[in-house]
Amino acid sequence: MNTTEFAWVKEFAGAVTVSDPHGIITEMNDKAARSFEEDGGRALIGKNMLDCHPEPARSKLAELMKTRQTNIYTIEKKGVKKLIYQSPWYQNGEYAGYIEISMEIPFDMPHFIRS
Image (cartoon, rainbow, N blue to C red; front, side, top):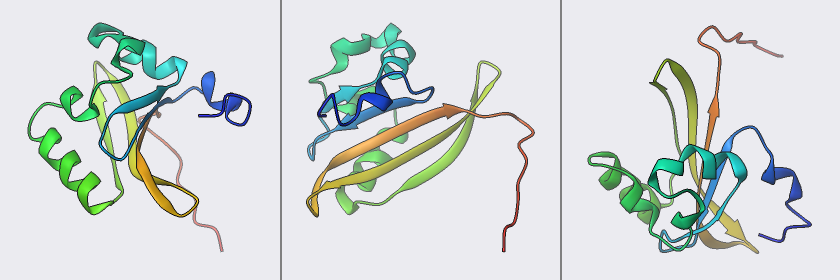
């Protein structure tokens, strides 16, 4: 990431992890580094993101990366509810890798329908 262009993401409240087309982690913001501290934090940069997921999540992520699909879901872990957004990212129209955004959300979240 160009640090000037993407300076906003460094201290963004959600964890942002970016990989190259082969799944190698290339960037982590501060929240992602803290979230994965027990697994190595920023030392995960250069490692394959598939190795950070247990089965069956690993196989699912591998398929998503292969087919370049987006996967969105919520989880609850240690009493915290999170939105997980996994998606391919592109640079100049070319597949550049995969991104995972994880952010805490309230259990009772308002939903609005806008016309």
